[in-house]
Amino acid sequence: MQGTVFVTRRIPQPGLDLLAYAGLTVEVNPHDRVLSREELLAGVRGKDGVLCLLTDKIDDAVMDAAGPRCKGFANYAVGYDNVDLTAATRRGLPVSNTPGVLTDAAADQAWALLMAAARRTVESDAFMRTGKWQGWGPMQFLGVDLVGATLGIVGAGRIGTVVARRAAGWQMNIIYTDPRGKPEFEEEFGARRVELDQLLREADFVSLHVALTPQTHHLIGKRELELMKPTAVLVNTSRGPVVNEAALVDALRERRIFAAGLDVYEHEPAAAPGLLDLPNVVACPHLGSATIRTRTAMATMAATNLLAMLRGEMPLNCVNPEVLEGQKKKEMM
Image (cartoon, rainbow, N blue to C red; front, side):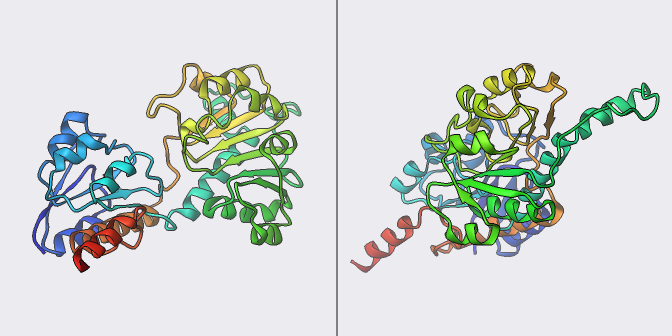
């Protein structure tokens, strides 16, 4: 296979090796940071394919820069809201993602945030490091209980399902909201499907697992936060803009909810003013898939998808398969 591909940021080596072993020239962003707009446009120019990240905005301008040689964009993420899918489909460019392989790691991160926020782990760790601790006290850093609590899952897809499965050890009651009923989910966990407002009123822990769409943008805002219990914990490992971050800051500052565990932010990499000053926030820098095994599996999956595109085949994880189906129809005419 001949051609040149551009990788917008270094990924685990096995993914790069797959591309190189196929005979491709692989150009990789030399900086350990997100490319500027100008750098991204220059990097994709004239390439046969692009392996991009969630932090790269792939729109008409990028596709124009890539030019007619480009056979598609392989996104190194399960989400693909960074790609203008309509523009890609219109141009006949396949787009792929990396679903499935990061489900367990993302679910584990949600639980890490949930437990750390519930038991005030980060806050008490910071206090311990100051040297101010004078010994055990019955009122120090009181958290909230997990055993027998109600866990509200917003979005019962792959990751939401695994998060619910992890709750078995704490004998938690599961409620969920989803556009469609999930009979198997309900049967496995004894879960009840409820409307979002009811979930927010009842849940002791609310974990968000929805894709970012116009319908889910600011799904959790001032009104929704006011429905939650003052002892409730909000966990967001989905997408930052699903939560109105300014409203969340107010709710946490005023102790209208107990705490929040966040892995994503509305305007990444920035956090809303005041958010990181709050002791009742556990904040991680978008680490949901950050295990060696998971990130490597994502790299090889993205590379495999890109190789399929360059061969004119349907990638295993194509999110706009109508593109290649349309190409086959044209070839048959």
